[in-house]
Image 1 (cartoon, rainbow, N blue to C red):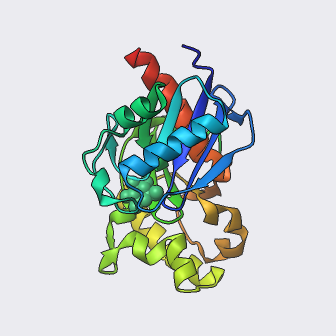
Image 2: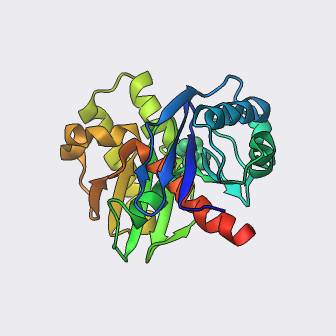
Image 3: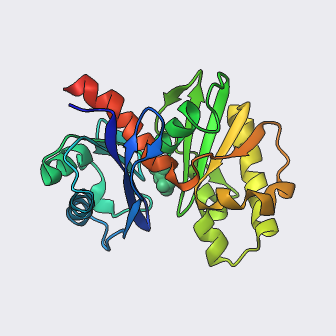
Length: 252
Ligand code: BGC
């Protein structure tokens, strides 16, 4: 199996994005392709979209998929921003059967974190790192010495009597029409809480909002160094491919 080039796919609450990735450098080998997340986003419809993605790239090799939920050995365990019928579905098996290709599935924020910590904004950093992806939901990943502790789900810690992502996600910023400084203030409160729980030395901010860090960085007052994700919105695609390289090799 050629594990140098892997099709990375990032399944999100609003879009499914993919591109073939050179897993050594993290470079996208073709322009990324986006398909809106189907509605309902149930296993059957998402599997169909993954098949469409494979067809678009005429892909015949291994695939790595980031999925917006807790994923253990390919099995989905939660469903905050995806159809509830995913709970306990074996996404790895389903996508492998749909595409007839080897597929590895991990949490989307864990994927993005892997790309950033191995090749991006946290490359070479050996201390404690928290990566947060701010989009429809809030995804998180936690690293020490470059090693991932999976499925941390810091977007769902209770904050101000609600799910943290309901207070601070990018979707909430849009819904409540908050300007960047107002939203940045909320983000700072949330990050202060995460910092209190985990004491990272470095926080990497990913997801759509990370592109706008300049607009709200004056609102952030944290102990840890905070930097935007280097791969910005491509981190999930790249990291999913990187995770597949390691995990599919073990399996095959
Ligand atoms: C999910 C996480 C996911 C994040 C970003 C959250 O609602 O629970 O698993 O990483 O959204 O997609």
